[in-house]
Amino acid sequence: MGYATVMRVPRIRTYAEAIKKFNDAKPIKGRSEDKRPLGERRDVDTYSIRKNVWTEAIECVLYQTPVIKFTVEDEVILRIDNWPSSSTCQFITRVLGVNANRVRGDVVLHFADGSKALMPAQGELALARSGNGAWLPKVKQTLYDYRVSRKEANNVRKQVSEFRKYLNGVVKLKGETTTFNEGTHYEQTTTRVKASYAELIEVFGRKDVGDGDTRYCPDADKWKISDKPKYWKDKDEVWANYRQATTEFFDLVRNDQDDGARHQNYWIAFNILMVQGTSLYWRDSMDYQVAMGADVFDKHLDKIMFKMFSDKVFTKVALPEGKVPTGKYDDYVTTEED
Image (tube, rainbow, N blue to C red; front, side, top):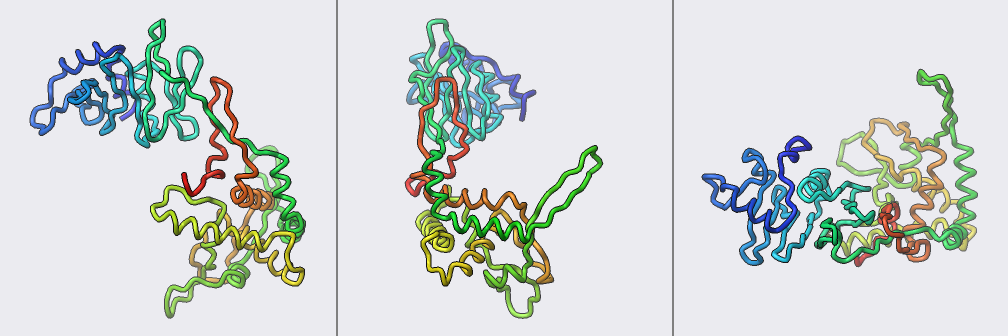
């Protein structure tokens, strides 16, 4: 499926046109259901048209999803059922003449008056005709996005300011700078920090895979905490693990801790940051090294802290008409109720 096939789907402007298209389409022989093509018959399993016997709505179906419904009131109901794909966008654009595209994984509709609407992953969006016949949202959306409160972000950073000094010192001490030229006319310089499996295993322990196995892998999975849980079936358990991991990490890096344990805690926290975003595989040698860019440590620390204190760091703001959310911080503000 793609642009070539969707161009064989007809434009439909009204309920009257939709019901005529349904009546004119001959059902596919040999099917147990009343399967009628929307477009060419060979594409019937991709694009089809049907009549809802309860509401009399004419439904334009993409695969199994009734994406576009023409109602007897001559309005349109859109739904995507968690399928924000390029194919869905092409289908809406072709049938309705309303431009749809994907923006950071969401389906955004662009209307003739310059307004925009965001398709909900679940639920419906109703369209009605304007005075000039163009489709517009029946109820105009107010779209929101999240912004970082600089003041609150700095307050959160202050709680771990001593660890940040320690972190920058270790990164400077352990960083290895390399200058290279990959066939270009200019040199590039990068600084990376490395840690051996022996160092990581000393902090996290070694994964156990059974007697006689001589391979090595640090047991650090539970410390990969930069991402909040999302779309998990066992939500309670996953959130409990996340809360425990972030609380334990914060206890390692907070300023107000016992000075006797501070250095050891900071060293553990440094290694926790080393494994964020790193894939750890079984290796034959304890000397195997993993590496991270020197500029990434502060970013990982901010990410963990900002997600942990998202209720303070982020504010929800209404966007001007015509603007759509960036979605940049959606994962940061996820809560157990979402």
